[in-house]
Amino acid sequence: MIVGSNPTEPATDQTHAVFSTQTVVKIQQHKLWLEREGYRPKTVRSSISNLKSLARKCDVDNPKSVKEELARRDVSEGTKEKYCWVYERYLRQHGIRWDRPRYRRVERLPFIPTEKDIDQLVGGLSKRLATIVLFLKETGCRKGEMWDVKWVDIDSERNIVQINSPEKNSRPRKVRISSRLMSLINQLPRACEYIFRKSKDSSPHSILSYYWQKRKEISRKVNNPNLMRIDFKCLRHFKASHEYYKTKDIVHVKELLGHRCLKNTLIYVHLNKFEGDDNYIVKVAKSIEQYCSLLESGFEYVSDFGECKVCRKRK
Image (cartoon, rainbow, N blue to C red):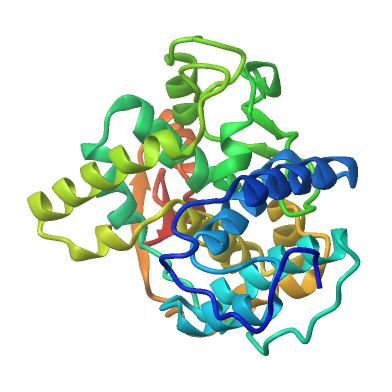
């Protein structure tokens, strides 16, 4: 037990509503310990934020008090499991062991929007937000990875972007994007070295509230409730499931997402078992310019019809 704690006294919300000076010092020391142990800045920030959340409601120096607080919290099993990871690091710093609660994240199939839904959403967004949504859709990268992309990471001539700040121990990778998206990127103001930031120190959370507000407005305007379910993460699922459906190459999808373990990619195999083969948009190209434009937009060649080319793309 950490010095200063008393396991016989139950913690109350009123007792820990405000941090004591001692608690503030310990949390700051834990932050320095995480940095010395080599944890990434994003992990340090989220860990300290979650530890403060616990400290507001219970005695973090008393594992029993923390268990009671986690049992009371009306959050998902996955969130409770995340709190356990954060608290275990705090205990490890002080050389303390505990009997970890049996919380496990419940696996759920992700929501995957149709391309029509995404196009409706993009059509109502500002130029900057629309470019961000299209970037996530075409690259399949995570929100934080997108936020860290710099101007030096794009190749405008070959329409290639490099993801050089991977999250969750993923691999860096290169992704080809459409000419349309590259054109939108090049129209953005160059406020700093990062493409999607207005300032160097801004956080991706700075755009979330505005995105949620616009998403709600557009959903009501077009009378499409599915738009309310489109968050930044499901755009990654959209890219992965469509790439697997198109290529049937799970290793290709694994490299595209930056996964180190194939197990994390296999979910997209199961998702595509329930997709119908007739769920397509079909278009006819009457010129080489139209044909190239369709290919750049994700359509694939099917057959010739006279002097025209028939292409299709999944909805």
